[in-house]
Image (tube, rainbow, N blue to C red; front, side, top):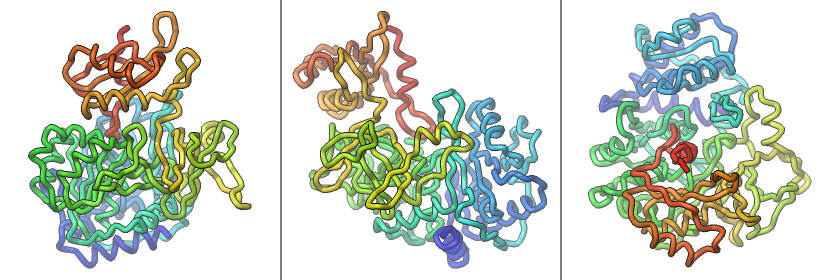
Length: 497
Protein backbone atom coordinates (compact mmCIF):
# COMPACT_ATOMS: atom_id res chain seq x y z
CA UNK A 1 0.00 0.00 0.00
CA UNK A 2 2.91 2.36 0.76
CA UNK A 3 4.37 1.61 -2.66
CA UNK A 4 1.00 2.25 -4.31
CA UNK A 5 0.08 5.42 -2.41
CA UNK A 6 3.50 7.06 -1.90
CA UNK A 7 6.45 5.62 -3.83
CA UNK A 8 4.84 5.00 -7.23
CA UNK A 9 3.11 8.41 -7.55
CA UNK A 10 6.27 10.17 -6.38
CA UNK A 11 8.46 8.43 -8.96
CA UNK A 12 5.86 9.18 -11.64
CA UNK A 13 5.95 12.87 -10.62
CA UNK A 14 9.74 12.92 -10.87
CA UNK A 15 9.69 11.27 -14.30
CA UNK A 16 6.85 13.39 -15.69
CA UNK A 17 7.90 16.78 -14.31
CA UNK A 18 11.70 16.73 -14.27
CA UNK A 19 12.10 20.38 -15.16
CA UNK A 20 9.25 21.70 -13.05
CA UNK A 21 9.96 23.13 -9.62
CA UNK A 22 9.61 20.75 -6.69
CA UNK A 23 10.65 23.19 -3.95
CA UNK A 24 11.08 26.86 -3.24
CA UNK A 25 13.37 27.11 -0.19
CA UNK A 26 14.58 30.49 1.02
CA UNK A 27 13.69 32.01 -2.36
CA UNK A 28 15.68 29.40 -4.31
CA UNK A 29 13.92 26.96 -6.64
CA UNK A 30 14.83 23.28 -7.10
CA UNK A 31 13.44 21.13 -9.90
CA UNK A 32 12.22 17.57 -9.56
CA UNK A 33 15.41 16.51 -11.34
CA UNK A 34 17.51 18.39 -8.76
CA UNK A 35 15.54 16.68 -6.01
CA UNK A 36 16.00 13.23 -7.59
CA UNK A 37 19.78 13.69 -7.77
CA UNK A 38 19.84 14.76 -4.14
CA UNK A 39 17.83 11.72 -3.05
CA UNK A 40 20.07 9.39 -5.07
CA UNK A 41 23.34 10.68 -3.62
CA UNK A 42 22.06 10.38 -0.04
CA UNK A 43 20.64 6.93 -0.70
CA UNK A 44 23.97 5.87 -2.19
CA UNK A 45 25.82 7.10 0.90
CA UNK A 46 23.43 5.29 3.27
CA UNK A 47 24.24 2.03 1.46
CA UNK A 48 27.94 2.52 2.28
CA UNK A 49 27.43 2.91 6.02
CA UNK A 50 27.44 0.11 8.58
CA UNK A 51 24.67 0.21 11.18
CA UNK A 52 22.00 -2.09 12.59
CA UNK A 53 19.22 0.21 13.76
CA UNK A 54 16.33 0.86 11.37
CA UNK A 55 15.81 4.35 12.85
CA UNK A 56 17.83 7.15 11.25
CA UNK A 57 18.19 10.50 12.98
CA UNK A 58 17.44 13.39 10.62
CA UNK A 59 18.40 16.90 11.66
CA UNK A 60 15.34 18.84 10.48
CA UNK A 61 16.92 21.76 8.65
CA UNK A 62 15.05 23.73 6.03
CA UNK A 63 16.93 22.74 2.88
CA UNK A 64 16.68 20.46 -0.11
CA UNK A 65 19.05 17.87 1.41
CA UNK A 66 16.80 17.38 4.44
CA UNK A 67 13.67 16.74 2.38
CA UNK A 68 15.65 14.49 0.04
CA UNK A 69 16.91 12.54 3.06
CA UNK A 70 13.34 11.57 3.97
CA UNK A 71 12.84 9.81 0.64
CA UNK A 72 16.34 8.33 0.67
CA UNK A 73 15.64 6.87 4.11
CA UNK A 74 12.32 5.44 2.90
CA UNK A 75 13.88 4.02 -0.28
CA UNK A 76 16.41 2.18 1.89
CA UNK A 77 13.65 0.59 3.96
CA UNK A 78 14.38 2.72 7.04
CA UNK A 79 12.49 5.19 9.24
CA UNK A 80 13.41 8.79 10.04
CA UNK A 81 13.38 10.43 13.44
CA UNK A 82 13.40 14.24 13.06
CA UNK A 83 15.76 16.13 15.38
CA UNK A 84 15.04 19.85 15.58
CA UNK A 85 18.31 21.83 15.35
CA UNK A 86 16.95 24.63 17.57
CA UNK A 87 15.87 22.35 20.41
CA UNK A 88 18.13 21.83 23.45
CA UNK A 89 21.01 19.44 22.88
CA UNK A 90 20.05 17.39 25.92
CA UNK A 91 16.61 16.77 24.45
CA UNK A 92 18.07 15.74 21.10
CA UNK A 93 20.54 13.38 22.76
CA UNK A 94 17.69 11.90 24.83
CA UNK A 95 15.71 11.21 21.63
CA UNK A 96 18.77 9.66 19.96
CA UNK A 97 19.24 7.40 22.96
CA UNK A 98 15.59 6.41 23.25
CA UNK A 99 15.19 5.66 19.55
CA UNK A 100 18.46 3.66 19.47
CA UNK A 101 19.73 5.77 16.59
CA UNK A 102 23.13 4.86 15.15
CA UNK A 103 23.12 6.80 11.86
CA UNK A 104 22.39 10.54 11.68
CA UNK A 105 21.94 12.68 8.56
CA UNK A 106 22.66 16.40 8.91
CA UNK A 107 22.94 18.93 6.09
CA UNK A 108 24.75 21.36 8.39
CA UNK A 109 27.66 20.66 10.74
CA UNK A 110 26.55 20.27 14.35
CA UNK A 111 29.76 19.47 16.21
CA UNK A 112 28.13 17.62 19.09
CA UNK A 113 26.72 15.05 16.62
CA UNK A 114 30.17 14.15 15.25
CA UNK A 115 30.41 11.34 17.82
CA UNK A 116 27.78 9.44 15.82
CA UNK A 117 27.87 7.73 12.45
CA UNK A 118 27.16 10.99 10.61
CA UNK A 119 26.31 11.73 6.98
CA UNK A 120 26.76 15.39 6.03
CA UNK A 121 24.25 15.39 3.20
CA UNK A 122 25.22 18.78 1.77
CA UNK A 123 28.84 17.62 1.25
CA UNK A 124 28.13 14.56 -0.88
CA UNK A 125 29.12 14.46 -4.57
CA UNK A 126 26.31 14.33 -7.10
CA UNK A 127 25.41 11.02 -8.70
CA UNK A 128 23.09 10.03 -11.52
CA UNK A 129 19.47 10.14 -10.51
CA UNK A 130 18.51 6.50 -10.10
CA UNK A 131 15.86 5.24 -7.69
CA UNK A 132 16.48 1.80 -6.24
CA UNK A 133 13.98 1.30 -3.46
CA UNK A 134 13.36 -1.63 -1.13
CA UNK A 135 9.87 -3.07 -1.15
CA UNK A 136 9.36 -3.86 2.53
CA UNK A 137 6.33 -4.52 4.70
CA UNK A 138 3.71 -1.84 5.33
CA UNK A 139 4.11 -2.74 9.00
CA UNK A 140 7.64 -1.30 8.95
CA UNK A 141 8.14 2.12 10.48
CA UNK A 142 8.18 5.25 8.32
CA UNK A 143 8.97 7.75 11.07
CA UNK A 144 8.89 8.29 14.82
CA UNK A 145 7.81 11.67 16.18
CA UNK A 146 8.78 12.51 19.73
CA UNK A 147 6.30 14.63 21.63
CA UNK A 148 6.30 16.01 25.18
CA UNK A 149 5.84 13.41 27.88
CA UNK A 150 4.26 13.82 31.30
CA UNK A 151 7.39 12.38 32.92
CA UNK A 152 9.54 15.16 31.50
CA UNK A 153 11.02 12.83 28.88
CA UNK A 154 9.77 12.96 25.28
CA UNK A 155 7.68 10.00 24.13
CA UNK A 156 7.95 8.55 20.64
CA UNK A 157 4.89 7.96 18.45
CA UNK A 158 5.58 5.26 15.86
CA UNK A 159 3.97 5.66 12.44
CA UNK A 160 4.22 2.83 9.94
CA UNK A 161 4.31 2.90 6.16
CA UNK A 162 0.81 1.46 6.21
CA UNK A 163 -0.35 4.31 8.46
CA UNK A 164 0.87 6.96 6.00
CA UNK A 165 -0.51 5.10 3.00
CA UNK A 166 -3.92 4.81 4.69
CA UNK A 167 -3.82 8.52 5.48
CA UNK A 168 -3.06 9.54 1.90
CA UNK A 169 -5.83 7.32 0.56
CA UNK A 170 -8.33 8.88 3.00
CA UNK A 171 -7.02 12.38 2.30
CA UNK A 172 -7.54 12.14 -1.46
CA UNK A 173 -11.03 10.71 -0.83
CA UNK A 174 -12.04 14.05 0.73
CA UNK A 175 -12.03 15.46 -2.80
CA UNK A 176 -8.81 17.45 -3.21
CA UNK A 177 -7.70 17.92 -6.79
CA UNK A 178 -4.01 18.88 -6.87
CA UNK A 179 -2.01 19.15 -10.08
CA UNK A 180 1.52 20.04 -11.17
CA UNK A 181 0.39 23.66 -11.51
CA UNK A 182 -0.30 24.08 -7.80
CA UNK A 183 1.84 26.08 -5.38
CA UNK A 184 1.68 24.56 -1.92
CA UNK A 185 2.63 25.91 1.50
CA UNK A 186 4.74 23.88 3.97
CA UNK A 187 4.97 26.00 7.11
CA UNK A 188 5.34 23.31 9.80
CA UNK A 189 8.51 22.02 11.42
CA UNK A 190 9.42 18.48 10.38
CA UNK A 191 9.06 17.44 14.01
CA UNK A 192 5.29 18.04 13.67
CA UNK A 193 3.18 15.57 11.68
CA UNK A 194 1.26 18.12 9.57
CA UNK A 195 4.59 18.69 7.79
CA UNK A 196 4.24 15.18 6.31
CA UNK A 197 0.95 16.10 4.63
CA UNK A 198 2.38 19.47 3.61
CA UNK A 199 5.28 18.01 1.62
CA UNK A 200 3.68 14.75 0.44
CA UNK A 201 0.60 16.29 -1.19
CA UNK A 202 2.55 18.44 -3.68
CA UNK A 203 5.36 15.94 -4.25
CA UNK A 204 2.95 13.15 -5.21
CA UNK A 205 1.32 15.40 -7.84
CA UNK A 206 4.32 17.21 -9.34
CA UNK A 207 3.48 20.51 -7.63
CA UNK A 208 5.85 22.98 -5.94
CA UNK A 209 6.37 23.12 -2.16
CA UNK A 210 7.15 26.48 -0.52
CA UNK A 211 8.88 26.24 2.87
CA UNK A 212 9.70 28.63 5.74
CA UNK A 213 13.34 29.19 6.81
CA UNK A 214 14.03 28.61 10.51
CA UNK A 215 15.50 32.11 10.91
CA UNK A 216 12.39 33.89 9.61
CA UNK A 217 9.25 35.02 11.46
CA UNK A 218 6.76 32.46 10.20
CA UNK A 219 3.65 34.58 9.76
CA UNK A 220 5.60 37.40 8.13
CA UNK A 221 7.25 35.00 5.69
CA UNK A 222 3.93 33.35 4.90
CA UNK A 223 2.48 36.81 4.18
CA UNK A 224 5.24 37.29 1.59
CA UNK A 225 4.69 33.87 0.01
CA UNK A 226 0.95 34.41 -0.27
CA UNK A 227 1.50 37.76 -1.92
CA UNK A 228 4.45 36.97 -4.18
CA UNK A 229 3.86 33.39 -5.31
CA UNK A 230 0.10 33.09 -5.62
CA UNK A 231 -0.16 29.99 -3.42
CA UNK A 232 -3.04 27.65 -4.20
CA UNK A 233 -2.97 25.11 -1.35
CA UNK A 234 -1.89 25.23 2.27
CA UNK A 235 -2.45 23.93 5.78
CA UNK A 236 -2.15 26.54 8.53
CA UNK A 237 -2.67 26.72 12.28
CA UNK A 238 -5.28 29.25 13.47
CA UNK A 239 -2.55 30.84 15.61
CA UNK A 240 -0.64 31.79 12.47
CA UNK A 241 -3.75 33.22 10.87
CA UNK A 242 -4.37 35.23 14.03
CA UNK A 243 -0.90 36.79 13.65
CA UNK A 244 -1.89 37.76 10.10
CA UNK A 245 -5.12 39.38 11.30
CA UNK A 246 -3.75 42.96 11.46
CA UNK A 247 -2.92 42.63 7.75
CA UNK A 248 -6.22 41.15 6.55
CA UNK A 249 -7.07 44.40 4.75
CA UNK A 250 -3.90 43.99 2.69
CA UNK A 251 -4.19 40.25 2.01
CA UNK A 252 -6.02 39.22 -1.14
CA UNK A 253 -5.18 35.76 -2.44
CA UNK A 254 -7.75 34.77 -5.08
CA UNK A 255 -5.33 32.05 -6.26
CA UNK A 256 -5.86 29.96 -3.10
CA UNK A 257 -8.02 26.94 -3.97
CA UNK A 258 -7.83 24.90 -0.77
CA UNK A 259 -7.01 26.01 2.74
CA UNK A 260 -6.78 23.61 5.68
CA UNK A 261 -7.07 24.83 9.26
CA UNK A 262 -5.46 22.45 11.70
CA UNK A 263 -3.28 21.86 14.80
CA UNK A 264 -5.72 23.49 17.22
CA UNK A 265 -9.37 24.48 17.57
CA UNK A 266 -10.49 26.98 14.91
CA UNK A 267 -12.43 30.09 16.09
CA UNK A 268 -15.37 30.68 13.75
CA UNK A 269 -15.09 34.48 13.85
CA UNK A 270 -11.42 34.34 12.83
CA UNK A 271 -12.17 31.87 10.04
CA UNK A 272 -14.99 34.02 8.67
CA UNK A 273 -12.68 37.05 8.51
CA UNK A 274 -9.85 35.03 6.96
CA UNK A 275 -12.22 33.61 4.34
CA UNK A 276 -12.54 37.10 2.83
CA UNK A 277 -8.77 37.10 2.17
CA UNK A 278 -9.00 33.84 0.20
CA UNK A 279 -12.31 34.39 -1.61
CA UNK A 280 -12.08 31.40 -3.95
CA UNK A 281 -10.76 28.80 -1.52
CA UNK A 282 -12.57 25.79 -0.16
CA UNK A 283 -11.78 25.86 3.57
CA UNK A 284 -11.61 22.77 5.76
CA UNK A 285 -11.16 22.29 9.47
CA UNK A 286 -9.06 19.14 9.93
CA UNK A 287 -8.53 17.45 13.28
CA UNK A 288 -6.18 14.69 14.32
CA UNK A 289 -3.72 13.63 17.01
CA UNK A 290 -0.28 12.39 15.96
CA UNK A 291 -1.34 8.92 17.09
CA UNK A 292 -3.95 8.78 14.29
CA UNK A 293 -1.53 9.90 11.53
CA UNK A 294 -1.96 13.60 10.87
CA UNK A 295 -5.76 13.98 10.44
CA UNK A 296 -8.69 11.73 11.24
CA UNK A 297 -11.78 13.99 10.93
CA UNK A 298 -12.67 16.96 8.75
CA UNK A 299 -15.33 19.62 8.34
CA UNK A 300 -16.00 21.77 5.29
CA UNK A 301 -16.55 25.42 6.24
CA UNK A 302 -19.79 27.01 5.03
CA UNK A 303 -19.04 30.43 3.59
CA UNK A 304 -22.59 31.73 4.04
CA UNK A 305 -22.25 31.81 7.82
CA UNK A 306 -23.96 28.50 8.56
CA UNK A 307 -20.91 26.63 9.86
CA UNK A 308 -21.44 24.55 12.97
CA UNK A 309 -19.73 25.74 16.11
CA UNK A 310 -19.54 25.09 19.83
CA UNK A 311 -18.33 27.85 22.14
CA UNK A 312 -17.24 29.72 19.02
CA UNK A 313 -15.09 26.86 17.74
CA UNK A 314 -15.74 25.08 14.44
CA UNK A 315 -17.03 21.54 14.38
CA UNK A 316 -14.34 18.97 13.56
CA UNK A 317 -16.81 17.16 11.32
CA UNK A 318 -16.92 13.49 10.46
CA UNK A 319 -14.28 10.73 10.40
CA UNK A 320 -12.19 10.32 7.26
CA UNK A 321 -12.73 7.22 5.13
CA UNK A 322 -11.73 3.99 6.82
CA UNK A 323 -11.77 5.43 10.34
CA UNK A 324 -14.21 4.87 13.19
CA UNK A 325 -14.94 7.48 15.86
CA UNK A 326 -16.87 6.94 19.08
CA UNK A 327 -17.63 8.99 22.18
CA UNK A 328 -17.27 7.15 25.49
CA UNK A 329 -17.84 7.82 29.19
CA UNK A 330 -15.47 7.01 32.05
CA UNK A 331 -16.48 3.33 31.93
CA UNK A 332 -15.86 2.97 28.16
CA UNK A 333 -19.59 2.95 27.42
CA UNK A 334 -20.43 4.37 24.01
CA UNK A 335 -22.56 7.50 24.31
CA UNK A 336 -25.40 8.58 22.05
CA UNK A 337 -25.80 11.84 20.17
CA UNK A 338 -25.51 15.12 22.07
CA UNK A 339 -23.80 13.48 25.06
CA UNK A 340 -20.30 14.67 25.88
CA UNK A 341 -17.48 12.25 26.45
CA UNK A 342 -14.01 11.35 25.26
CA UNK A 343 -13.46 11.04 21.52
CA UNK A 344 -11.76 7.77 20.55
CA UNK A 345 -10.44 6.76 17.12
CA UNK A 346 -9.85 3.39 15.43
CA UNK A 347 -8.70 2.36 11.96
CA UNK A 348 -5.68 1.74 9.73
CA UNK A 349 -4.17 5.16 10.45
CA UNK A 350 -3.79 4.34 14.15
CA UNK A 351 -0.20 4.09 15.42
CA UNK A 352 1.09 0.72 16.60
CA UNK A 353 1.89 2.51 19.85
CA UNK A 354 4.50 4.52 21.69
CA UNK A 355 8.12 3.53 21.24
CA UNK A 356 9.06 1.05 23.99
CA UNK A 357 6.52 2.46 26.44
CA UNK A 358 4.17 -0.33 27.48
CA UNK A 359 2.76 1.65 30.41
CA UNK A 360 1.69 4.56 28.20
CA UNK A 361 0.33 2.16 25.58
CA UNK A 362 -1.86 0.47 28.19
CA UNK A 363 -3.28 3.88 29.18
CA UNK A 364 -3.88 5.23 25.69
CA UNK A 365 -5.28 2.24 23.77
CA UNK A 366 -8.11 -0.22 24.38
CA UNK A 367 -10.20 -2.78 22.49
CA UNK A 368 -13.96 -2.68 22.04
CA UNK A 369 -16.44 -4.75 20.05
CA UNK A 370 -18.27 -2.67 17.44
CA UNK A 371 -21.00 -4.58 15.59
CA UNK A 372 -19.29 -7.86 16.41
CA UNK A 373 -15.85 -6.67 15.29
CA UNK A 374 -13.09 -6.20 17.86
CA UNK A 375 -11.48 -2.82 17.22
CA UNK A 376 -8.49 -1.08 18.77
CA UNK A 377 -9.15 2.51 19.83
CA UNK A 378 -6.99 5.45 20.86
CA UNK A 379 -8.14 7.78 23.63
CA UNK A 380 -7.66 11.28 22.25
CA UNK A 381 -8.21 13.10 25.55
CA UNK A 382 -10.61 15.45 23.76
CA UNK A 383 -14.09 16.21 25.08
CA UNK A 384 -16.61 16.00 22.23
CA UNK A 385 -20.07 14.89 21.21
CA UNK A 386 -21.87 13.85 18.03
CA UNK A 387 -24.72 16.11 16.95
CA UNK A 388 -27.83 14.72 15.26
CA UNK A 389 -26.16 14.98 11.82
CA UNK A 390 -23.18 12.88 12.89
CA UNK A 391 -20.79 15.83 13.05
CA UNK A 392 -18.38 15.94 15.97
CA UNK A 393 -18.56 19.05 18.14
CA UNK A 394 -15.29 19.85 19.93
CA UNK A 395 -15.60 21.07 23.51
CA UNK A 396 -11.95 21.14 24.56
CA UNK A 397 -9.40 18.94 26.24
CA UNK A 398 -10.48 16.70 29.09
CA UNK A 399 -7.56 18.11 31.03
CA UNK A 400 -8.97 21.61 30.40
CA UNK A 401 -11.88 20.60 32.61
CA UNK A 402 -11.51 21.76 36.19
CA UNK A 403 -13.62 21.65 39.31
CA UNK A 404 -14.33 24.88 41.18
CA UNK A 405 -16.42 24.71 44.36
CA UNK A 406 -17.52 21.24 43.28
CA UNK A 407 -18.71 22.39 39.85
CA UNK A 408 -17.17 20.92 36.70
CA UNK A 409 -16.10 23.73 34.38
CA UNK A 410 -14.97 23.70 30.75
CA UNK A 411 -12.36 26.40 30.20
CA UNK A 412 -13.40 26.63 26.56
CA UNK A 413 -16.73 28.14 27.58
CA UNK A 414 -14.99 30.91 29.54
CA UNK A 415 -12.71 31.58 26.58
CA UNK A 416 -15.70 31.77 24.24
CA UNK A 417 -17.46 34.48 26.25
CA UNK A 418 -14.17 36.33 26.70
CA UNK A 419 -13.50 36.40 22.97
CA UNK A 420 -17.08 37.42 22.32
CA UNK A 421 -16.65 40.51 24.49
CA UNK A 422 -13.21 41.21 23.00
CA UNK A 423 -14.62 41.17 19.45
CA UNK A 424 -12.35 38.35 18.34
CA UNK A 425 -9.29 39.30 20.36
CA UNK A 426 -7.81 36.09 21.74
CA UNK A 427 -8.34 34.89 25.30
CA UNK A 428 -7.04 31.76 27.07
CA UNK A 429 -8.30 30.49 30.42
CA UNK A 430 -6.01 28.47 32.69
CA UNK A 431 -6.52 26.92 36.10
CA UNK A 432 -4.00 27.39 38.90
CA UNK A 433 -3.59 26.69 42.61
CA UNK A 434 -3.75 29.83 44.75
CA UNK A 435 -1.82 30.38 48.00
CA UNK A 436 -4.27 28.33 50.03
CA UNK A 437 -4.23 25.60 47.34
CA UNK A 438 -7.71 26.26 46.02
CA UNK A 439 -8.25 26.08 42.27
CA UNK A 440 -8.98 29.41 40.60
CA UNK A 441 -9.11 30.60 37.00
CA UNK A 442 -7.02 33.22 35.26
CA UNK A 443 -8.04 34.61 31.90
CA UNK A 444 -5.14 35.72 29.71
CA UNK A 445 -6.00 38.38 27.14
CA UNK A 446 -3.77 38.91 24.11
CA UNK A 447 -3.16 42.60 23.46
CA UNK A 448 -2.78 45.90 25.26
CA UNK A 449 -3.97 46.23 28.85
CA UNK A 450 -7.29 47.97 29.49
CA UNK A 451 -9.59 48.40 32.45
CA UNK A 452 -10.90 44.88 32.87
CA UNK A 453 -13.97 45.84 34.91
CA UNK A 454 -16.22 45.87 31.85
CA UNK A 455 -14.95 42.45 30.78
CA UNK A 456 -15.62 40.97 34.23
CA UNK A 457 -19.11 42.46 34.29
CA UNK A 458 -19.83 40.99 30.87
CA UNK A 459 -18.65 37.55 31.98
CA UNK A 460 -20.87 37.80 35.07
CA UNK A 461 -23.83 38.40 32.78
CA UNK A 462 -23.09 35.21 30.86
CA UNK A 463 -21.80 32.71 33.43
CA UNK A 464 -22.38 31.64 37.03
CA UNK A 465 -20.15 33.11 39.74
CA UNK A 466 -17.91 30.05 40.09
CA UNK A 467 -16.83 30.37 36.45
CA UNK A 468 -15.71 34.00 36.70
CA UNK A 469 -11.89 34.35 36.46
CA UNK A 470 -10.21 35.44 39.67
CA UNK A 471 -7.88 37.65 37.64
CA UNK A 472 -7.36 38.99 34.11
CA UNK A 473 -3.77 39.10 32.87
CA UNK A 474 -2.63 40.80 29.65
CA UNK A 475 0.12 39.75 27.25
CA UNK A 476 1.12 41.50 24.03
CA UNK A 477 1.22 38.18 22.15
CA UNK A 478 0.73 34.59 23.22
CA UNK A 479 3.71 32.22 23.03
CA UNK A 480 3.55 29.40 20.51
CA UNK A 481 5.17 26.01 20.77
CA UNK A 482 7.16 24.35 17.97
CA UNK A 483 3.92 23.08 16.42
CA UNK A 484 2.38 26.53 16.09
CA UNK A 485 -0.09 25.99 18.92
CA UNK A 486 -0.61 28.39 21.81
CA UNK A 487 1.74 27.27 24.59
CA UNK A 488 -0.49 27.13 27.66
CA UNK A 489 2.32 25.93 29.88
CA UNK A 490 4.39 28.97 28.96
CA UNK A 491 1.42 31.19 29.81
CA UNK A 492 1.11 29.54 33.23
CA UNK A 493 4.73 30.42 33.99
CA UNK A 494 3.73 34.09 33.81
CA UNK A 495 1.39 33.70 36.76
CA UNK A 496 3.07 35.38 39.71
CA UNK A 497 0.16 35.43 42.13
